[in-house]
Image 1 (spheres, one colour):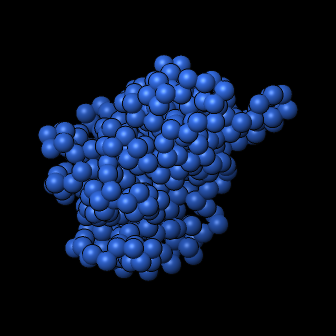
Image 2 (image 1 turned 45 degrees about the horizontal axis):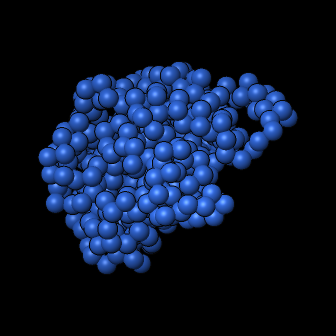
Image 3 (image 1 turned 60 degrees about the vertical axis):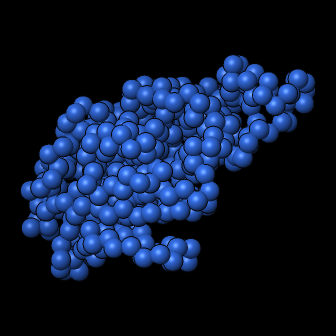
Length: 378
Protein backbone atom coordinates (compact mmCIF):
# COMPACT_ATOMS: atom_id res chain seq x y z
CA UNK A 1 0.00 0.00 0.00
CA UNK A 2 1.26 3.49 -0.86
CA UNK A 3 -0.89 5.01 1.90
CA UNK A 4 -1.57 2.40 4.62
CA UNK A 5 -3.76 3.18 7.62
CA UNK A 6 -0.70 2.77 9.84
CA UNK A 7 2.95 3.05 8.84
CA UNK A 8 4.62 3.13 12.26
CA UNK A 9 3.65 2.05 15.76
CA UNK A 10 4.73 5.36 17.32
CA UNK A 11 5.13 8.99 16.45
CA UNK A 12 8.87 9.75 16.21
CA UNK A 13 9.34 5.98 16.23
CA UNK A 14 13.13 5.65 16.18
CA UNK A 15 13.53 7.96 19.18
CA UNK A 16 10.68 6.24 21.07
CA UNK A 17 12.03 2.72 20.44
CA UNK A 18 15.51 3.75 21.60
CA UNK A 19 14.14 5.22 24.82
CA UNK A 20 11.92 2.16 25.34
CA UNK A 21 14.93 -0.16 25.02
CA UNK A 22 16.81 1.86 27.64
CA UNK A 23 13.78 1.78 29.94
CA UNK A 24 13.38 -2.00 29.65
CA UNK A 25 17.07 -2.55 30.38
CA UNK A 26 17.15 -0.31 33.44
CA UNK A 27 13.73 -0.48 35.13
CA UNK A 28 13.22 -2.63 38.20
CA UNK A 29 9.41 -2.80 37.85
CA UNK A 30 7.21 -3.84 34.95
CA UNK A 31 3.83 -4.16 36.69
CA UNK A 32 1.67 -1.06 37.16
CA UNK A 33 3.58 1.60 39.06
CA UNK A 34 4.85 5.17 39.00
CA UNK A 35 5.13 5.53 35.21
CA UNK A 36 1.46 4.61 34.89
CA UNK A 37 0.45 7.03 37.62
CA UNK A 38 2.52 9.86 36.11
CA UNK A 39 0.93 9.25 32.71
CA UNK A 40 -2.53 9.34 34.32
CA UNK A 41 -1.77 12.68 35.97
CA UNK A 42 -0.34 14.32 32.86
CA UNK A 43 -3.06 13.05 30.52
CA UNK A 44 -5.81 14.25 32.87
CA UNK A 45 -4.06 17.60 33.28
CA UNK A 46 -3.79 18.04 29.49
CA UNK A 47 -7.59 17.77 29.35
CA UNK A 48 -8.24 19.89 32.43
CA UNK A 49 -9.72 16.88 34.26
CA UNK A 50 -8.98 15.77 37.83
CA UNK A 51 -8.50 12.01 37.47
CA UNK A 52 -7.10 9.60 34.92
CA UNK A 53 -7.42 5.83 35.35
CA UNK A 54 -5.13 3.89 33.01
CA UNK A 55 -6.19 0.40 31.85
CA UNK A 56 -5.04 -2.16 29.31
CA UNK A 57 -7.26 -1.12 26.38
CA UNK A 58 -9.96 1.27 25.25
CA UNK A 59 -12.46 -1.59 25.33
CA UNK A 60 -11.56 -2.24 28.97
CA UNK A 61 -12.05 1.45 29.69
CA UNK A 62 -15.66 1.25 28.45
CA UNK A 63 -16.31 -1.95 30.40
CA UNK A 64 -14.77 -0.59 33.62
CA UNK A 65 -16.71 2.67 33.38
CA UNK A 66 -20.10 0.99 33.15
CA UNK A 67 -19.20 -1.53 35.86
CA UNK A 68 -18.13 1.29 38.18
CA UNK A 69 -21.38 3.19 37.61
CA UNK A 70 -23.33 0.00 38.35
CA UNK A 71 -21.31 -0.66 41.51
CA UNK A 72 -22.13 2.85 42.71
CA UNK A 73 -25.85 2.37 41.99
CA UNK A 74 -25.94 5.20 39.48
CA UNK A 75 -26.97 2.69 36.81
CA UNK A 76 -29.08 -0.38 37.54
CA UNK A 77 -30.23 -3.52 35.72
CA UNK A 78 -32.84 -2.59 33.14
CA UNK A 79 -31.83 1.08 32.84
CA UNK A 80 -31.98 2.38 29.27
CA UNK A 81 -28.60 3.54 27.99
CA UNK A 82 -28.50 5.42 24.69
CA UNK A 83 -25.48 5.23 22.43
CA UNK A 84 -24.33 6.42 19.00
CA UNK A 85 -25.72 4.06 16.36
CA UNK A 86 -22.52 4.55 14.34
CA UNK A 87 -19.92 3.27 16.75
CA UNK A 88 -17.46 0.53 17.64
CA UNK A 89 -18.50 -2.86 18.99
CA UNK A 90 -16.96 -2.50 22.45
CA UNK A 91 -18.84 0.72 23.07
CA UNK A 92 -22.12 -1.22 22.88
CA UNK A 93 -21.22 -4.68 24.17
CA UNK A 94 -20.65 -3.55 27.80
CA UNK A 95 -24.13 -2.00 27.86
CA UNK A 96 -25.55 -5.44 27.10
CA UNK A 97 -23.07 -7.27 29.35
CA UNK A 98 -23.96 -5.05 32.32
CA UNK A 99 -27.68 -5.85 32.01
CA UNK A 100 -28.74 -2.42 30.74
CA UNK A 101 -31.09 -1.86 27.82
CA UNK A 102 -29.16 -0.53 24.78
CA UNK A 103 -30.95 2.20 22.82
CA UNK A 104 -29.30 3.30 19.54
CA UNK A 105 -29.42 7.00 18.71
CA UNK A 106 -29.33 8.05 15.09
CA UNK A 107 -26.38 10.01 13.68
CA UNK A 108 -26.35 13.05 11.42
CA UNK A 109 -24.88 12.27 7.99
CA UNK A 110 -23.01 15.58 7.84
CA UNK A 111 -21.24 15.21 11.18
CA UNK A 112 -21.32 11.38 11.51
CA UNK A 113 -22.35 11.97 15.12
CA UNK A 114 -25.36 12.25 17.40
CA UNK A 115 -26.56 15.86 17.56
CA UNK A 116 -28.59 17.43 20.35
CA UNK A 117 -31.89 17.15 18.43
CA UNK A 118 -31.35 13.37 18.11
CA UNK A 119 -30.88 12.71 21.85
CA UNK A 120 -33.63 11.06 23.87
CA UNK A 121 -33.71 12.73 27.27
CA UNK A 122 -35.98 10.11 28.82
CA UNK A 123 -32.96 7.78 29.06
CA UNK A 124 -30.94 7.19 32.21
CA UNK A 125 -27.62 7.59 30.40
CA UNK A 126 -26.21 8.37 26.95
CA UNK A 127 -22.79 7.07 25.88
CA UNK A 128 -21.73 9.02 22.80
CA UNK A 129 -18.92 8.06 20.42
CA UNK A 130 -17.05 11.00 18.91
CA UNK A 131 -16.77 9.33 15.51
CA UNK A 132 -13.46 9.55 13.61
CA UNK A 133 -12.40 12.74 15.37
CA UNK A 134 -15.59 14.63 14.65
CA UNK A 135 -18.22 15.30 17.31
CA UNK A 136 -21.76 16.43 17.86
CA UNK A 137 -22.77 19.71 19.51
CA UNK A 138 -21.57 18.42 22.88
CA UNK A 139 -21.97 21.75 24.66
CA UNK A 140 -25.70 21.75 23.86
CA UNK A 141 -25.99 18.04 24.62
CA UNK A 142 -24.36 18.52 28.03
CA UNK A 143 -26.69 21.38 28.90
CA UNK A 144 -29.76 19.36 27.99
CA UNK A 145 -28.50 16.22 29.77
CA UNK A 146 -27.91 18.28 32.93
CA UNK A 147 -31.41 19.73 32.68
CA UNK A 148 -32.99 16.27 32.30
CA UNK A 149 -30.74 14.49 34.82
CA UNK A 150 -29.24 12.19 32.15
CA UNK A 151 -25.73 10.80 32.71
CA UNK A 152 -23.52 11.83 29.79
CA UNK A 153 -20.50 9.69 28.88
CA UNK A 154 -18.10 10.08 25.96
CA UNK A 155 -16.15 7.47 24.04
CA UNK A 156 -13.33 9.72 22.82
CA UNK A 157 -11.08 6.98 21.43
CA UNK A 158 -11.11 8.55 17.95
CA UNK A 159 -11.15 12.25 18.81
CA UNK A 160 -8.23 12.95 21.14
CA UNK A 161 -7.53 16.68 20.84
CA UNK A 162 -10.66 17.73 18.92
CA UNK A 163 -11.93 21.02 20.30
CA UNK A 164 -15.28 22.78 20.10
CA UNK A 165 -15.74 26.48 19.41
CA UNK A 166 -16.75 26.90 23.05
CA UNK A 167 -13.13 26.05 23.94
CA UNK A 168 -13.59 22.61 25.51
CA UNK A 169 -11.88 19.51 24.22
CA UNK A 170 -13.91 16.42 23.42
CA UNK A 171 -13.69 14.00 26.31
CA UNK A 172 -14.39 16.74 28.87
CA UNK A 173 -18.16 17.25 28.55
CA UNK A 174 -19.48 14.13 30.24
CA UNK A 175 -19.29 12.67 33.72
CA UNK A 176 -16.49 10.52 32.31
CA UNK A 177 -14.81 9.75 29.01
CA UNK A 178 -12.81 6.86 27.59
CA UNK A 179 -9.74 6.75 25.35
CA UNK A 180 -7.78 4.15 23.38
CA UNK A 181 -4.01 4.08 22.86
CA UNK A 182 -3.98 1.19 20.39
CA UNK A 183 -1.43 1.45 17.58
CA UNK A 184 -2.70 3.77 14.86
CA UNK A 185 -4.60 5.95 17.32
CA UNK A 186 -3.55 9.49 18.12
CA UNK A 187 -1.32 8.39 20.97
CA UNK A 188 0.05 4.84 20.79
CA UNK A 189 1.14 2.65 23.69
CA UNK A 190 0.63 -0.51 21.54
CA UNK A 191 -2.35 -1.47 23.73
CA UNK A 192 -3.86 0.72 26.41
CA UNK A 193 -6.81 2.86 27.44
CA UNK A 194 -7.81 5.58 29.87
CA UNK A 195 -10.89 6.85 31.68
CA UNK A 196 -11.04 10.53 32.64
CA UNK A 197 -13.39 11.93 35.26
CA UNK A 198 -13.47 14.80 37.72
CA UNK A 199 -15.87 12.91 40.00
CA UNK A 200 -13.81 11.65 42.98
CA UNK A 201 -16.21 8.89 43.99
CA UNK A 202 -16.30 7.49 40.47
CA UNK A 203 -12.51 7.72 40.18
CA UNK A 204 -12.05 5.69 43.38
CA UNK A 205 -14.49 3.05 42.18
CA UNK A 206 -12.75 2.86 38.79
CA UNK A 207 -9.42 2.16 40.50
CA UNK A 208 -11.11 -0.60 42.48
CA UNK A 209 -12.75 -2.03 39.34
CA UNK A 210 -9.44 -1.95 37.49
CA UNK A 211 -7.70 -4.24 39.96
CA UNK A 212 -9.67 -7.20 41.32
CA UNK A 213 -11.96 -5.21 43.60
CA UNK A 214 -9.35 -4.80 46.34
CA UNK A 215 -8.13 -1.58 47.93
CA UNK A 216 -4.52 -1.57 46.75
CA UNK A 217 -3.44 1.51 44.74
CA UNK A 218 -6.17 3.59 46.37
CA UNK A 219 -5.45 6.69 48.41
CA UNK A 220 -5.04 6.19 52.15
CA UNK A 221 -8.33 8.01 52.76
CA UNK A 222 -10.24 5.89 50.24
CA UNK A 223 -8.69 2.64 51.49
CA UNK A 224 -9.55 3.49 55.08
CA UNK A 225 -13.10 4.38 54.03
CA UNK A 226 -13.66 0.99 52.41
CA UNK A 227 -12.20 -0.86 55.40
CA UNK A 228 -14.34 1.12 57.80
CA UNK A 229 -17.50 0.64 55.74
CA UNK A 230 -17.06 -3.14 55.69
CA UNK A 231 -15.58 -3.49 59.20
CA UNK A 232 -12.20 -4.75 58.01
CA UNK A 233 -9.96 -4.10 61.01
CA UNK A 234 -7.18 -6.56 60.21
CA UNK A 235 -4.49 -5.20 57.86
CA UNK A 236 -3.47 -8.77 57.17
CA UNK A 237 -6.98 -9.82 56.13
CA UNK A 238 -7.42 -6.61 54.14
CA UNK A 239 -4.72 -7.71 51.70
CA UNK A 240 -7.17 -10.22 50.22
CA UNK A 241 -10.48 -8.47 50.82
CA UNK A 242 -12.58 -7.70 47.72
CA UNK A 243 -15.20 -4.97 48.01
CA UNK A 244 -17.15 -5.00 44.75
CA UNK A 245 -17.38 -6.48 41.26
CA UNK A 246 -14.23 -5.88 39.27
CA UNK A 247 -11.75 -7.12 36.68
CA UNK A 248 -8.00 -7.33 36.31
CA UNK A 249 -7.39 -4.84 33.50
CA UNK A 250 -4.27 -3.20 34.85
CA UNK A 251 -1.69 -1.74 32.45
CA UNK A 252 2.05 -2.37 32.66
CA UNK A 253 4.81 0.15 33.30
CA UNK A 254 5.68 -0.16 29.61
CA UNK A 255 2.24 1.30 28.84
CA UNK A 256 2.85 4.19 31.22
CA UNK A 257 6.34 4.82 29.85
CA UNK A 258 5.16 4.85 26.23
CA UNK A 259 2.26 7.13 27.11
CA UNK A 260 4.64 9.66 28.64
CA UNK A 261 6.98 9.42 25.64
CA UNK A 262 4.17 10.02 23.17
CA UNK A 263 2.70 12.88 25.21
CA UNK A 264 5.84 14.85 24.41
CA UNK A 265 4.50 15.06 20.85
CA UNK A 266 0.76 15.19 21.53
CA UNK A 267 0.17 18.85 20.61
CA UNK A 268 2.13 18.36 17.39
CA UNK A 269 0.22 15.16 16.55
CA UNK A 270 -3.12 16.90 17.06
CA UNK A 271 -2.20 19.89 14.90
CA UNK A 272 -0.91 17.71 12.05
CA UNK A 273 -4.12 15.68 12.03
CA UNK A 274 -6.14 18.91 12.05
CA UNK A 275 -4.07 20.42 9.23
CA UNK A 276 -4.42 17.29 7.08
CA UNK A 277 -8.18 17.31 7.56
CA UNK A 278 -8.35 21.01 6.71
CA UNK A 279 -6.46 20.45 3.44
CA UNK A 280 -8.81 17.64 2.45
CA UNK A 281 -11.98 19.33 3.66
CA UNK A 282 -12.98 20.54 0.16
CA UNK A 283 -13.29 16.93 -1.06
CA UNK A 284 -14.85 15.54 2.12
CA UNK A 285 -18.50 16.07 1.30
CA UNK A 286 -19.94 16.01 4.80
CA UNK A 287 -18.74 19.21 6.44
CA UNK A 288 -21.76 21.46 6.13
CA UNK A 289 -22.49 21.24 9.85
CA UNK A 290 -19.03 21.32 11.43
CA UNK A 291 -19.00 25.01 12.37
CA UNK A 292 -19.28 24.04 16.05
CA UNK A 293 -15.79 22.46 15.86
CA UNK A 294 -12.75 24.69 16.27
CA UNK A 295 -10.07 22.00 15.92
CA UNK A 296 -10.65 18.63 14.24
CA UNK A 297 -8.10 16.08 15.40
CA UNK A 298 -9.41 13.56 12.89
CA UNK A 299 -8.63 9.90 13.49
CA UNK A 300 -9.20 9.30 9.76
CA UNK A 301 -10.51 11.04 6.65
CA UNK A 302 -14.18 10.06 6.11
CA UNK A 303 -16.08 10.07 2.83
CA UNK A 304 -19.73 9.52 1.91
CA UNK A 305 -20.47 8.63 -1.71
CA UNK A 306 -23.68 7.07 -3.02
CA UNK A 307 -21.61 5.21 -5.62
CA UNK A 308 -19.17 4.11 -2.92
CA UNK A 309 -17.99 0.98 -4.76
CA UNK A 310 -16.46 3.02 -7.59
CA UNK A 311 -14.60 5.28 -5.18
CA UNK A 312 -13.33 2.37 -3.07
CA UNK A 313 -12.02 0.76 -6.26
CA UNK A 314 -10.21 3.97 -7.20
CA UNK A 315 -8.67 4.36 -3.74
CA UNK A 316 -7.48 0.77 -3.57
CA UNK A 317 -6.20 0.80 -7.17
CA UNK A 318 -4.01 3.76 -6.18
CA UNK A 319 -2.69 2.00 -3.09
CA UNK A 320 -4.80 3.86 -0.52
CA UNK A 321 -6.03 1.56 2.26
CA UNK A 322 -9.68 2.12 3.20
CA UNK A 323 -12.12 0.84 5.82
CA UNK A 324 -15.87 1.16 6.56
CA UNK A 325 -16.83 4.01 8.88
CA UNK A 326 -16.10 1.92 11.97
CA UNK A 327 -18.94 -0.59 12.54
CA UNK A 328 -21.45 1.41 10.48
CA UNK A 329 -24.96 1.04 11.82
CA UNK A 330 -24.19 -1.21 14.79
CA UNK A 331 -27.70 -2.67 14.78
CA UNK A 332 -26.83 -4.50 11.56
CA UNK A 333 -24.02 -6.42 13.27
CA UNK A 334 -24.49 -10.15 14.10
CA UNK A 335 -23.93 -9.77 17.85
CA UNK A 336 -26.63 -7.08 18.06
CA UNK A 337 -29.20 -9.20 16.24
CA UNK A 338 -28.42 -12.11 18.56
CA UNK A 339 -29.05 -10.21 21.78
CA UNK A 340 -31.46 -7.38 20.86
CA UNK A 341 -34.75 -8.10 19.13
CA UNK A 342 -36.26 -4.60 19.03
CA UNK A 343 -35.92 -2.74 15.73
CA UNK A 344 -35.10 0.97 15.42
CA UNK A 345 -35.52 3.54 12.64
CA UNK A 346 -32.03 4.93 12.02
CA UNK A 347 -31.94 6.57 8.56
CA UNK A 348 -28.75 8.54 9.17
CA UNK A 349 -26.82 5.53 10.46
CA UNK A 350 -28.18 3.45 7.55
CA UNK A 351 -26.93 6.03 5.04
CA UNK A 352 -23.48 6.12 6.64
CA UNK A 353 -23.39 2.32 6.78
CA UNK A 354 -24.17 2.02 3.07
CA UNK A 355 -22.18 4.92 1.66
CA UNK A 356 -19.30 5.68 4.03
CA UNK A 357 -15.64 4.75 4.16
CA UNK A 358 -12.41 6.28 5.42
CA UNK A 359 -8.70 6.41 4.67
CA UNK A 360 -5.69 7.25 6.80
CA UNK A 361 -5.05 10.56 8.48
CA UNK A 362 -1.60 9.91 9.89
CA UNK A 363 0.51 12.81 11.18
CA UNK A 364 3.23 11.79 8.71
CA UNK A 365 1.10 12.13 5.57
CA UNK A 366 3.07 13.94 2.87
CA UNK A 367 1.78 16.65 0.54
CA UNK A 368 1.97 14.14 -2.31
CA UNK A 369 -0.13 11.62 -0.36
CA UNK A 370 -2.71 14.27 0.52
CA UNK A 371 -2.88 15.27 -3.15
CA UNK A 372 -3.41 11.63 -4.21
CA UNK A 373 -6.24 11.20 -1.68
CA UNK A 374 -7.86 14.43 -2.91
CA UNK A 375 -7.55 13.32 -6.54
CA UNK A 376 -9.20 9.95 -5.84
CA UNK A 377 -12.05 11.62 -3.97
CA UNK A 378 -12.72 14.25 -6.63
